Length: 119
Length: 107
Image (tube, rainbow over all chains, first blue to last red; front, side, top):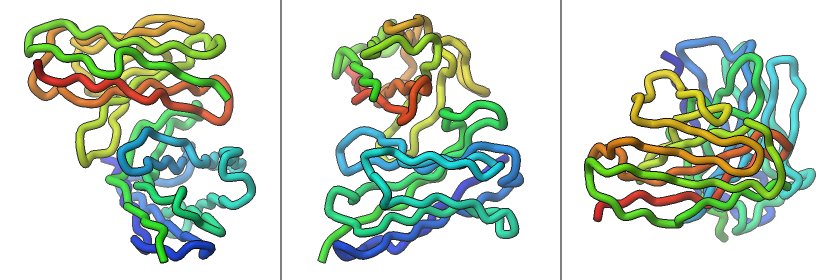
């Protein structure tokens, strides 16, 4: 059974860089699509970024060029960096695994890690 | 980006009743629509993909239909564990987007 576990700093100051990690167990990080999805408090879901196993990536234009997603196959981890954070980046961040062939589906989810941007 | 409009915002029903949730897309998305269920404090769970295919382990009382711009999630007979928030999501055009959700609560 695939399990995903996010980890992060919890609290980040405005204008700093947010770094999140998702550790995958019960399966290889290879051969699937991987995503980060976030949910601001009391609000809906926003697809932040995704990466294929081949390394192709795509980012939500709402975050412009502040976001980077990467895969580390040696550690079976994916990560997300968000630069120059503001209060609008406060959210629960989920990592999710898709399928091998289809992008845009979140089949397995981590439990989420809450991030608050505040001074 | 494609906007998904879900209705109603809240659906108040009793266990044993039938629930019908709607999702309308701002442009045609073919059959590239999924439905997720989310309970308080939990991550969403994939229920339906490609408009009408149940994900692994999802009970048969959940069904999806529709194509183009209009989609429906039906729960044939509500069980106590089905009272939750439901989101639709499109994967036709990046960025993939979610609707704002329909809350199914106990009447």
